[in-house]
Length: 160
Image 1: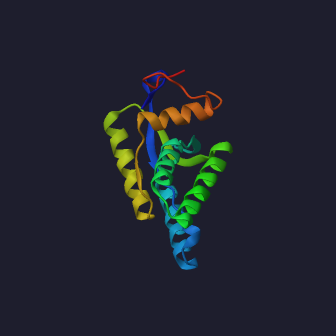
Image 2: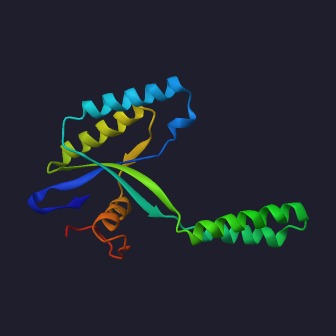
Image 3: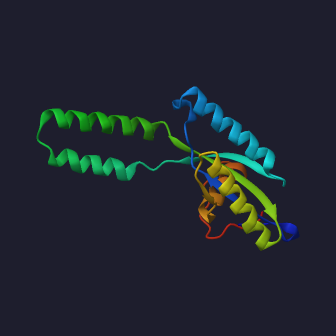
């Protein structure tokens, strides 16, 4: 949680992205109607936040390099080299993961837990997975919106 002035705590849920546009039209409509009903059900102030998180592909690139060293078949080596080129393109273009959050502020810890459960359950009825935000998630949000994209190195998220 982020502790703010006035004894408020900011927390919420992180939503796992889902591409509904690969579904048939009827399924898309069902998800959108469910989301509309879900948003209309929320009876407290909330913020829908979209944040970009840098993706670290160095471990994957190292794994590809190890595989390349072990493979002797020219066709497989060519595929691995193509993957390595694609990964390098992503690294050069600063690829990011887009993350979605629903955040709210509240003073009472019991009410916070009830609201978090309400959000998680409501999103589940829409076919979306979510979980309570972590300290790292909130750090990403702060970095994106308050620190101009600069990554923080401190241990605990505190109010500014």
